[in-house]
Image (cartoon, rainbow, N blue to C red; front, top):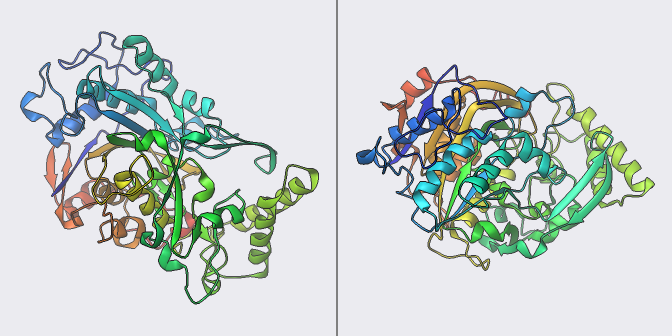
Length: 485
């Protein structure tokens, strides 16, 4: 059995961004003296979520309550993976930005309980690998993560980061169409892991010779193909994560144009140090052994080809001119309710495989990049759904006030329940549906029928949950009519 605890408060808001998100009162287990002058309902909601889960229930509301102690041991190396996509974009409202990235108040509450569990000897790190063009300093400041890091540096001397896990960073102008700079950093942190024929991508590579061209936007397709061929599928993970004893994911409850929903499972991409190794889609239409768009047209094929040329170009005038023209064409084809490019539709059969590959790496990979048959670390998740994202996520979702957080020690179970609360049919979402299937390096030993739901401490069955907590999310446009309950 797997338990998923859901705490819901329809009227909840994030605390003010000018503070360090301390609780509003001194709980018996609280380690510090600093509290807020005002309310922090997020802290209360998360605390209640852990309590309803039954975590260390015999000590609840005492000074020795340790709700994460079941998974986090004294002296553990803990890596916290918050969902960070990009800094706030031009013309993006603050509320829509809150529906894109994790909020600092979620991280702060979790860290308080992590430090109770690890004690002073634990090594706690926070980090993520967002989009290559993301300004990391800006996004960690805008989300309040910097405030949280400064609090712990000041109050207990711990340097939690936040660490930028990317190897490649870029700088763009003219609304993201002109490349100004590309540079590498911290290359020694990259660990190369080859899943070989056990990769879920491998069955897509037709041994009879039909071409398969995997792609990820804004990277040279030749580089991406160097990581993937028949019997070879290499992922590049940041070493900091592989050196941990436990990963705690902090995903945002949000839709995703390539896999339907993004939560704890898809959040694994935040561990990838070199994004060029990611297979987001296969070039072309299904008739061409691709899933970039549903139907091949001259315009679709032309733009796809020009995008390939643009990714290979330099930063000179000609390179940027091709890049500008290709991105204009891409955006024109993406316009309207039916506009699909870049694998942003329900027929994408590539991205979910890549995601589950990475999740298996996070659970079974050793720090030296070899895969063990036994799990090497635990992975649990706390989902931020105070403000969620619907529509064309993960980059441009519309904010949706949902007032919910979810916690589970099983990342497959928490995504299953998250999708139900969004109003989606999980059987139509390959990412989640396939996460429960038998495979080498399995992610879970349960089935969806083994999941128990708790809503504010009350046990529900699946039908009760659909009736009492269905937020009716708008799917990404490429998924409309395919995943709604």
